[in-house]
Image (cartoon, rainbow, N blue to C red; front, top):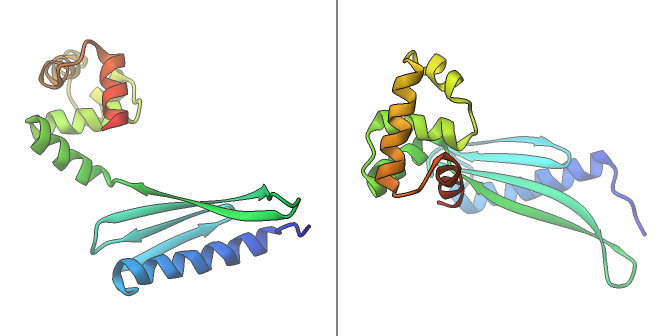
Length: 146
């Protein structure tokens, strides 16, 4: 059984990242951030961010296998546009929803946006109404799923 070192992880992830960049856009307008055991690939032209996570698992015959989990990450700007289009929320409501999606406390949302806490709560109530969910917890669950 062979154990992967950090250097080997890095080489494997770099190879996979290069291959995925070629698939997504022929290596134009992309960048990557490689660090064992995670890599991120950003495709600016396609607006796609991929997160790669490498794992070593035990195989059926006691050999280890290198497994890469590839996850597509939606840029915040795309999330805002999608939510605005799909659910009819305003640009400001989409911005507030982005903070809620990332579990940012309402007091910090108010500070970040330069608005009052009452205004943030009003936006959240309007979003809850538009998305037809029961409360803030249900809203967080809803946007985590969508």
